[in-house]
Amino acid sequence: MNRSDQPWDSSAPEEPLLGGDVTVGVVRSGDTVRRPRSASSERVRALLTHLERVGFAGAPRFLGVDDRDRDVITFMEGEVAGRPAPEWVASDDRAMSVARLLRSYHDAVASFGVPAVFDDAAPALPEGAPEPVPVPLELIGHRDVTLENVVFRDGVASALIDFDLARASSRVEDVSNMLQWWAPWQPVEDRAEVLKGVDAFARAAKMLDAYGLDAGSRPMLVPVARNAAERTWHTMKLRAERDGGGWRRMWEEGVGDAIRRRQSWLQENEEALVRAVM
Ligand SMILES: Nc1ncnc2c1ncn2[C@@H]1O[C@H](COP(=O)(O)OP(=O)(O)O)[C@@H](O)[C@H]1O
Ligand SMILES: [Mg+2]
Image 1 (tube, rainbow, N blue to C red):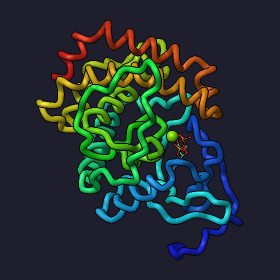
Image 2: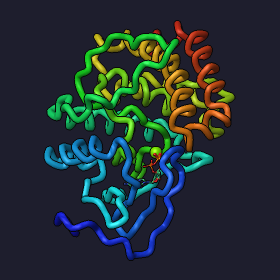
Image 3: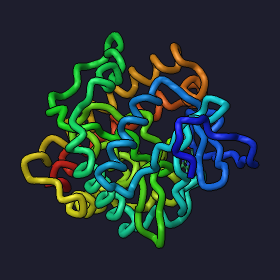
Image 4: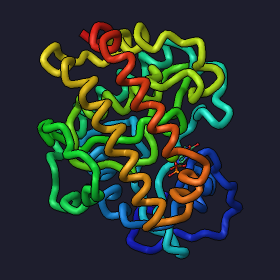
């Protein structure tokens, strides 16, 4: 593979990669993925380079930039949930393997610390948004562990992709983000069809055990989930207004109302959720 400082060539045939919400123009070219450079490019480059250095196999490698000013990363072979989500996302074994993958990511990223390149990664708190629940900013979290951002091989979660939202965070915040999508901690009406029948309480408990979340962090999960939902509403609104594109489309499609419904669901189910995670 080309690892020189020369830009990568982009003459090979390309195939659009769909399934994401935000990034326009993600394509596969041979065994690489090309993503238009963005505000997060330098951070993601530093992060992927660290993960390569420590030998973490569960993330793409950063390879360089191509002659069309796109970041070049490795294509991670395997299965990724598209939309509608396939039947297999309902498998508890798959969900538990996502939790194990997130744990191994955290263990690999811990030695990266919180480098200065991430200093401006956190969006300013929009007006009216609550302060974050105080958690230690101990590592660079992925912060977007959606159904579409995990690659599976042989039925086991093998790689995280899409590190655009990565920033200083805590294990418990990332675990809470994962539970939102994979338990899922969402009202039934807003879940992927195949997840409507899943017991989100029992499944969260299994995922936490698979992750190996310590007893001291568990009481933080539900408050962090509620706080994140509330802040996300404000952040998504700001991004829709300021950044437009996929953010605006999601807002117009009602993502704000869905977040409000999730907030209500978390509130109504608070006691059962706390019991499930302890
Ligand atoms: N490195 C990769 N290896 C395999 N598939 C990828 C890779 N990067 C992206 N994809 C595929 O492209 C889709 C969209 O890419 P993603 O980086 O998640 O963009 P978005 O920011 O739009 O969510 C993913 O859901 C996945 O199916
Ligand atoms: Mg994505």
